[in-house]
Image (tube, rainbow, N blue to C red; front, side):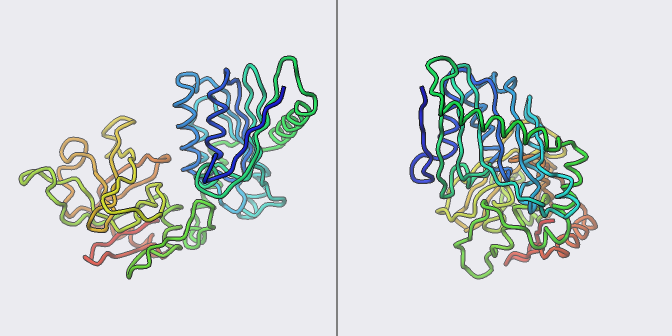
Length: 366
């Protein structure tokens, strides 16, 4: 017997809703996914949701991903994240040709197919959404899910269709290139080249900012915040939020700096909690310690930092801070000297990624 589900996103059932509904059924035996592009936000949201549903079983579940380097729309951090997942294998369609032509494919790779096998049924989701936040939850997408029994009674037409998709996936898997760390480094060098960081290729996770205030970040600036791996800022005088005799740990940043940290540029009311990220100061704490990012009533993005003198430096006042994106939602924080700050500024300037706030504090990305 076959079953049908649908995706009408974002107002009704999303791609992520449909996928999570499948994972809650029966005992999942395998995940096979072929998507044109993967962004760090999309990969993180899917994996975290699946892990929450499947619990300890997530680690042993076989996961296969096929994606592409096409047009430099897939983020290297996202690929690194997929490789880091337990029992996860990643392959890249026509990878060598695409690298030799700086991200331009010979034939574009454009599927959005999710094949999930359980002990009871085979599921095939075919839609329009990539492994991105837009594709999974936010963008306007449509699709269908078809499932069929693996034990009698079996509907032959539905079973034949899903088997054909499995055959296509298997053929594409065997003709694609396994993603190794050396292959990822080659792709990363193209992705992080001056040309791409200065004029990033937009993805579906890039949305137009509605902030038209004077001095606001342009859409091109926001795209740079999304693709760059490093964000630096002059901390300035930190508010003594922990008491009059203790150094503060709330960093005020330019409005929409949140995009670098993996959040949307969608306007939110003042004093809105935007989300939480992991921050490690020189590797000073373990995985899982999270810090909040808020849109403050002073119209700035406010990031809570590791406690000074405990998990952070003695104080943040008038320091130069550098954040490096390690994984989706995970950042390494270091402090730099004036000489290092000048190096960061030069790197940012070459890609038009250096900025100054009205207070005079400088910041940038590279």
